[in-house]
Length: 260
Image 1 (cartoon, helix red, strand yellow):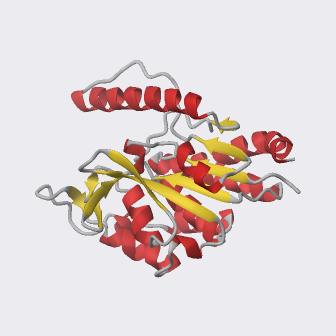
Image 2 (cartoon, helix red, strand yellow; image 1 turned 135 degrees about the horizontal axis):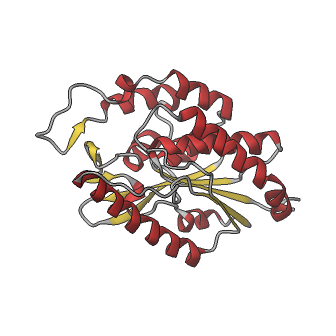
């Protein structure tokens, strides 16, 4: 009997499409995770997989997705996010309806950030799927925080970009973590204040995640090579998918060896 595989899917905005390619490679190799934890984009992909959607099904939805379906309404600079999450809810409800996380086919959890306390929050069990993954994916300032039980939540990547600790609750024998937001190719020119600020935040996040990952010790850390792809672009989704697939194909034999 093979060992229980726990799959950790990290945050990364549009770069998270690489997770779908990675899942495709696992499917082709006949490898199925027994549990999944996800953060931000990884929470959405992870929940889809946990519900039973194939990589092809998920990628087809991505290819047909229109920005207007998720960036609902007119940007409003006088509220806590430029856009409400109403469009995101509508789209995700078309898949998950009123399912709770415990109703999914594979053990699943996702992380969000408690905006007030600045702490990571894990949603699992009887939590409803859609509010949980919306909370995990609420990019600060772009979307209004998701309110659950009177608490405001924002993107899980703020406090736990790679939720390795969260997967441990399912007691997997082997943990494979996929980080789609690892360092890209070197850029030498940051022409304006916003680009410098964004780069500074990336440096802090990557250094923190690198130290935390070293401490939490996944059995395998997979780093798809996405170069300098922006997490906010919709122009390179096929590239992200192919790079995730390539990383998956390169990891298959090692994963098979780990799970026995």
